[in-house]
Amino acid sequence: MNFDFFADMITINPDQIRKILVRGVNWIGDAVLTTPALSAIRKEFPGATIHLLAKRPVAELLGKDPGIDRIMVYEIHGRHQGPLGRIKLVEEIKNGSFDMAILLQNAFEAALITFLSAIPIRCGYNTDGRGSLLNLPVPCTKETLGLHQVYYYLNLVRSISSREYKSEPLLRITGEEEAWAEELLNRSGCIGRPVIGINPGSTYGPAKRWPIERFAMLSDILIEQHNARVIIFGGPGEKELGAKIAGLMKEAPLDLTGETSIRELMALIRRCDLFITNDSGPMHIAAAFNVPIVAIFGPTDHKTTSPFGDGHIILRKDVRCSPCLLRECPADHECMESITADEVIDAAERQIKRKKDKRAWEESLSS
Amino acid sequence: MGRIAVFIDRDGTINKESGYIDRPDMIELIPGSAEAIKIINGMGLNAVVVTNQSGIGRSYFKEESLREVHRRLKEILMEEGAYIDAIYYCPHHPDDGCDCRKPMPGLLKKAASELDIDLCSSYVVGDKISDLILAQNVGAKGILVRTGYGSGVIEANNKKEVVPDLVTEDLLSAVKWIKEDIKKY
Image (cartoon, rainbow over all chains, first blue to last red; front, side):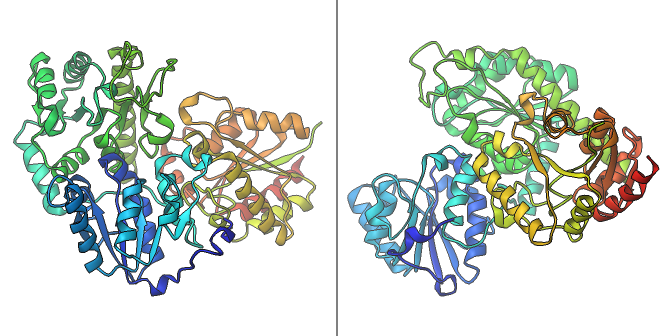
């Protein structure tokens, strides 16, 4: 990479950076995809403590990430609300005496806050008209925008480094969280049965949702064929959705919509043998734990936000208007409607077979 | 009769396995790789790299980045006097159903017609089962190396789904074997 661009800007000596504020992204799924960038920041500045400024769900998700030392929760609906709240936030950041800010989030506000907090080095993509607020801006080309989000974020860190970091999204849970999930599954009828997680919601909006009747039908068939235990996952706003699917099913699933914290969600998804999902935060959590995925994509761009890694199945249709990136479909929702239950069942069967083959392979190795 | 080639897998065979390699600086040669390729050059065979690069199909990096990686690979080999005749890659996603992702024979067939290569007198060296199946698919000899993923493959291949013509330590020992093997013809 050519660094001439920064010639008249600022040069950084990683050894002199002692305290870094990283402005995290706002969505859970995006946050999973920033983990390689976070681990690169840690490696690039081994002597620095790294503080993450993020909204509560993301703070929870990344709270135990080894790339982060401290969390600063951005209480956008609490004490940091409104102009006075923002002033309070600026004061809090000022008190932190940070040497550097790295903005993973793309927003004018992120740059403004770090500028007003007088953090000496402010680095981020040169988007959202914030170039003048950053003194270590990284140009965001059309090519960068076309890359998978993992590389989009990772390349920001690479462009201020002379080293080429690589990584995969990685989330960690504690032994305690792991034991909690195990115990819950054991007393919920999961012992000896394959656990299939379904995630029928999407915080972003209904356009990303595959019809719930099909989720119910699919679940019935997988229970019948594989003696599976189905868990419905979802956020607090999706309880009704979960209840509707559960009501349509023959065997009562374990409906956990709105019942789990982010940490609990992570621990439970990690234990699934298969995860069938819309394009969503939980999908990226599953990918980070290497859980085989069947992902149903409609209005979003599968190229830049697909589950990271190998072996996942993405179902989508080439319809004229996709990807539209809208939250609600103004037309007939063809991108989702045209994906049949049979297609998803077929993909699920392929994943189950692959997992069985892999297990047989591993057993043959250990015997 | 066409020329004889040694088709060499890239990651885990020539350079160290390192996930998706999208930057030139991530290339690090496995010791002996350059010497091996030099021997191939000296025997008058073609040294042709064949590699699956689904990172492009997955939008992890652009084709231009891959070309830079390959320029660098050729450059560091050249510094040691080793010359690559050609590099063929498959940029597709595994789900695309293309005919060039190894073990499909597309890349080798393309090389055969462009470089006038006699595939069934040629060799394929790699660290994965797919390299061995590729060899089988075109009637070439398949050699499995223990570098990269190779040592895992050797243990796991106890069902004998493909039988390699040789299992050996690394590219260098593979090429030394080829040097002897080729004298038989």
